[in-house]
Image 1 (cartoon, rainbow, N blue to C red):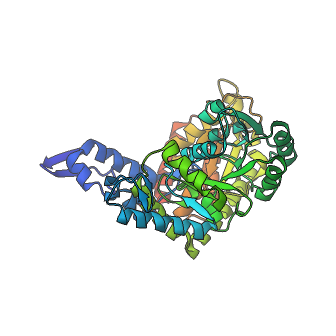
Image 2 (cartoon, helix red, strand yellow):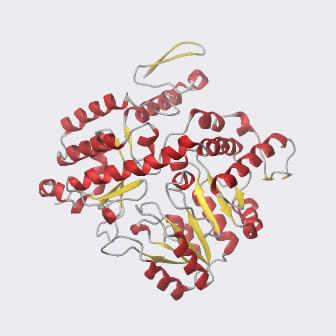
Image 3 (tube, rainbow, N blue to C red):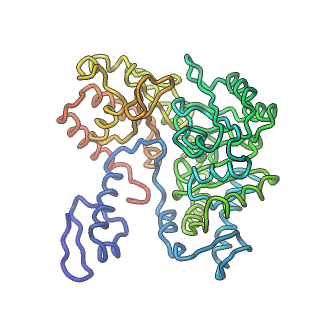
Length: 447
């Protein structure tokens, strides 16, 4: 692991990658070692969890800055504590940059993350027990859009629309029928595992018909929207929520954008409605990320994310894998491993008759390809052992990988999954991948 050579001195072993942990090493070597090991994991593996990415060193530095020392309840120019001059300027810059990047009329950059941002939206427009409508979780939706295990599904009368059973595309006629049947206060358009483009204009039309507030949750695709690789929810949506990491490559946080008419309600709902003082260091990190996202280089990145996902999907299809909706328009692919012809022989060898998404994700992780198991539409299996795996291209694209590399990764996935529990195959593939990753510097770690 490590050794201490004297007071304030700490040496990491070769398998631990130091990422500005000098002071941590001196004060808490145990945590410093774990940070170093995690940096090594992020450097030496192919990270394909669709909600993960690499933040730049500039974003990370802002997030670890002395701004964490300051408490700032309220909003710029209207704080409850003194000493806010510099904090106010940072927050104003973040708001200004978000408005310019997304074309929003009003922006709140204080939410701690995506779900708190969505809770603030509920508070702004709903009373407990009001009907709300969102995409079903097993069909690619998000917990905070009214699913039963979330507070959003327990405090509100949650209804859900689904994807078409054959195309796996959102059934907009079904959305309209569901909206007319339940008269929701809010209609959500957003997802955590839907690989196709969202038709914001169609959702807005339905919301107008039933008198609902239309909220677009673009947590997964905000970077694609900012980079012009996905249609924008503006001017269609009344409110837009997002996380600030994922494809946007910012710090872990949330943001709410809305029409001017809703600014007061949203601001009051965020503070004092659902949280206290903002995390100023994250606000600064977001400001940095928004500046990065306004560049031509980021536009190129966003387009490459989509191009990589499509090339990856095509390679999987050619190898006989079954993909939800038959492909992708955005940053992610969902593989139904239980229905993939490529794995027929594997399923026949499995003790329980099938290699589930959970089993396949674990095997890929051992081989150095990190993704997550995921439900698929109309999944007959349980959520903790579902039929699918979700794979995304934001992080690999941040490292500079392109379409050719996606085909290589698809080939590794095919090899590892077909090998089942073959530990030698997993170890050999992991070694190949570690060598492969050396050609692609990891932002925030290597550069």
